[in-house]
Image 1 (cartoon, rainbow, N blue to C red):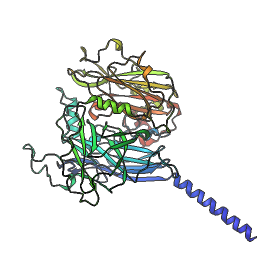
Image 2 (tube, helix red, strand yellow):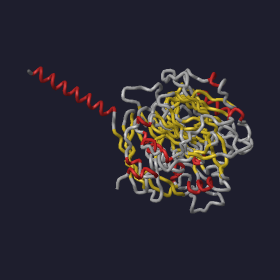
Image 3 (spheres, rainbow, N blue to C red):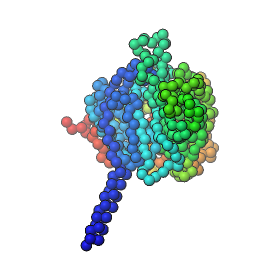
Image 4 (tube, rainbow, N blue to C red):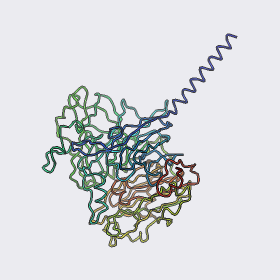
Length: 572
């Protein structure tokens, strides 16, 4: 009898342990955020900044693969709507939580609280940011770090894990910038005034055009960001870029960096002196504190790909126990030449999937869409276009329109898979005819089919000018099949595709006068934005939307409704 009681107690104990393990494996992480404007001085210049719980960058989300994230977002902007996108989270089974105003939800109105709820299904380095108007560049952004489940190991080792976000910073409000972009004559936003490293930069307050009350170089808010390291230890730096415009180079004086992960996928490791990173991308690099420990070192971000007047961003790589404010004894590295395009292409070509973590790529595709990126005019306004169509968002979110059969709310004429006359289009000169049209039509993809996207760059309306565009796909990762210079040749260039170990990403650059080839499977029911991640370019029409498997999307929550024709579904 005594033996039976012991067995029963042992069973109860084991059941309890197993139950606890299942709870640990799938936690609920609950965040309560209030978004509001506050005066801040991230680069010493005082201006209104959108904060989350008083912070910019906002709080980091730390989770484990399989966890459920709940964010209760209160909009205290008073006169402004808001929406937040969870950049890199695929939203499998929760397309309404993607946070893309006009695509997956109505915006959150002033005074309202909106609940985002989703599962982080894969370990890696991700981001979050505003996806309403141009709010991202007003300071509403942060990082998401997702760890592996307990008991699983990564293909590299390190002692400490840190997240940093690189950004550029404008002194004009997003309203002033948007008004200029929409004006006739056109008013470009210009170069950013500063580069921020983890929300801190340094503007020259001694400029004669700046009032003393506006800029204070001694403000602690703009003292350099400090990375404190212990000599001999290895650090995983999770680096994300959320620039509004700038492509960046990032380096740590005297230290090599080993690239091991990008956008949530393990990379065949390679060593760089400086890392090129584009808006919307994330990388993990390993850095060992193996230099002279008696001094500190500079960490530097530099704007590349455009001739610019923006000063480099500076932070301090602080070797403990040196004082963290002790300036390095050297001049900060000047960084690479801004126009060294081949170096940037070479890094793109070097990124391959880790041999032990290759996701097999379908050998063929069912559909090929060539997206020609051009700069155009519509009724005198300067626009960015894809296949001669400048994208506009509808007033009723696509997800609701498609699910509720409100097809009158957006253009039903599908955009072209390839522009008429593509074969004869000369990408190396400004187009003789720059006129374009605008539309809010979308691409409807057959569910579970394989789709190739060719991003083709071209000359802008300015002579001898082509710009780098980082493209981000919501709801998916894609295989990066290849990059090429010049014009894509549909009969020859696919022969050079990497079908052996292509990396998977959610954001990728299309280089100047070049093309980038992507492949993905349309297997995530929903409506997903695909757009240039440069804030002003998307605002000016450089994007599109994909629909797939809409009939498989479950009942939509009423919380995403309330604008456009969705008002009919809200009961008073």
